[in-house]
Image (tube, rainbow, N blue to C red):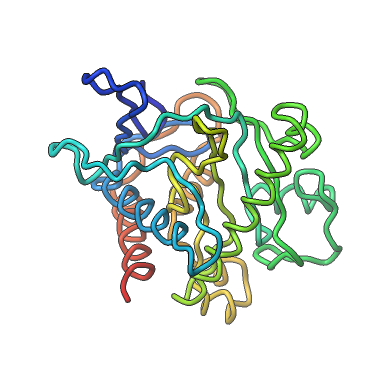
Length: 281
């Protein structure tokens, strides 16, 4: 089974409780897979996810967050970009947490004074830190369709009040812990998204990728503190380079244009720099 950027395999051993997730070098933006791929991206994101899963499972940093990794070694030929995981019943919600005003949230705020329907104080600027992080879920649409921002009330309709409340509280807690870790390393975690599933014991479990350059916005903390314009403040370590180039060169209809080599190279370099800054003691 293939998604936009990851491929899922069932083992040929007959073990139905295990899956192999392989991260490709494909890059997506605005619900489209783009050409060309980012060389080495799959290995970089797998390394970063694995590092974050380990940090979030450390009990001395707070409650350990259960995740879907088994700890088993993947096949050698894909070892650097794959993980063996437990099979979960995935929940149909992307758990988005926003700590800063940017992206589609900024566009909605300038028009309505809200982000995903949540009222925010007047006078905020692009890149501003929000008074408190906010939970803004999205419905995971079927393959080929666009994900849809939804209200918390709609999330309740989809998964029930208890599950929606647990997802919200867990997502906000993970974001706050990760944002603190990032800040210690001179980075702003502006926003991110999580995916969760239910294991055989009914436990809500963190799955898919976590806190990667594809699922999150990271900025340089010093630039954010010193910058006077959005461009200066939001010096990013994620695929914002790709989004910005597409926004300037494509009207979001039809087939996206081919990414220039310079954009591909800069994106790969930013992914590597982020990992170095986060994981280097």
